[in-house]
Length: 219
Image (cartoon, rainbow, N blue to C red; front, side, top):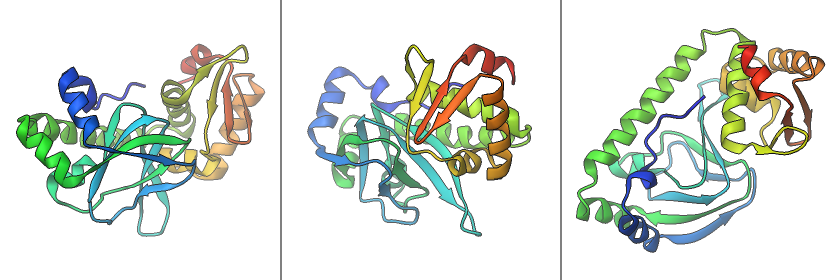
């Protein structure tokens, strides 16, 4: 399933991208490390150069819901900076991440000097619409929600090998359940069925999709 959010870096000119990268400070994060916390002041944004992160929100009962997976050449955390608001979600690394930390005042100065406010606000609106679409998907059965999510992970994190599409990450069954709004037990049952059908295999921090086309046909 394609993420239709505007990727800021893709619509900037080469000169603008170079200028934005020049005001960032290189940072590195290991897997499974929090980068931003929900409710934290938005003092900076992160331009991801390598690796992937998950964006989550915590419910009143303490459970986390995965809102999105973000990867290379994506700017995250800019919404709080632009709106002068606290972080609306937590961002945690899935893999090792290299990026550029861009201070709020530097980002605001860049946006102002390049007249990029309309573009930035449009990106915020589209990301919120994406969250609404995910809410609608929650009405589908667990199997359909899970196979949709596995296809998204394949597009974002997958690497084609002789085994199939390999997804290497720190995402757990609980993470999969949190994202699709299902119980861990329900996800475990559907994963077992998919394994028995020969469509995938699982290991520690690893999922292999042996036939993505066949997986898509099970939706």
